[in-house]
Length: 446
Image (cartoon, rainbow, N blue to C red; front, side, top):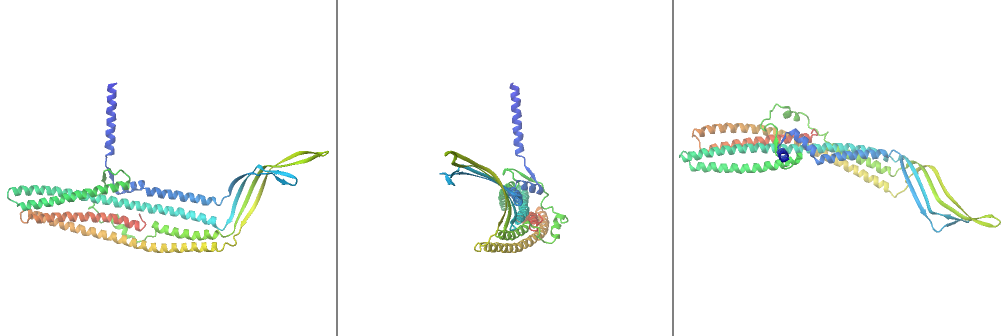
């Protein structure tokens, strides 16, 4: 028994350690996986799905207006005192009436058909709202992902620079001890190394914030470690389709969900005019009813012969059917309908103005996104040229410094210039990816 208990304890401990190791395992992400996880965990996406569900229910409600409605009703009556009626007492203590009514609308001023059209517009608008929400979630995910990749790359570069400065400080310290370098050189290296350590601390803090922002986007705990699985930022071939194809197509935003939503808003405003006008048009319906009433009593004294009167009581209980044609024609309401229609037409005018205004804004946004994408490509080309020049300069200065033909300050300047050029390229490539996503969103292709 003791051996069995020890085995079970060891097994439980092993499972606990495995679970702990699994919980601490880093999450590996690429851009595609990041988008998928962001869409799956987004609260806004779930809200948009609920709106689609609600719009479909609105469609079912609108369809039910074409169908006959069935209503049941019941009434209980207690009347006291008894009522006299042609020498008889009418007793209505506990009288009841119950029935069922079937109503089939035939014409309601066009409101039923308009209501169905409104539900159809609402369902299409909910679908466009889902498209817009998806594009926003993907845009936020790409922004957070590429920012994190960029800061990761900068972290790696600063760590490499720090390692180089550690090595250089050791070399200069040995040289200064041997009288081959001055104390000023050693102090210069230490100052630069302290500067790199400061940068490292800042980048590390920024990396942690970017990681937590990305954790929120993809819906994982904030303490989750994330490893990116994309190519290095400085490897972006100019010949790739993803690099050139987006700008080959003409700038257009006709498929943007925001534009479709504005069109739906205008269609709804026009339908509301017809709906308001229909409230003041004749309505026609067929009504069928069945009514049952009972517990109505008639009480009196009747002559039984020979002048003898005896009490007499009769109960009334009966059911009846009826069919009716109901026609309602509004005649005069002090201009209420006319003013409501005018108000609805003003809403149409506002919807047209909103459409025109936002169409211009979306045109400007699409043009601006195109400009930003072209500029980001140009910045990458400039950053690559600057990096190539700084690499060549660093190579020349390093050779001269090794041959004691230039001071330490020149070598440090060249080293830090190369580091800045590499950082500029990382930022330019990152901005390209973000600008590409923004361009696709602004042109309705995301």
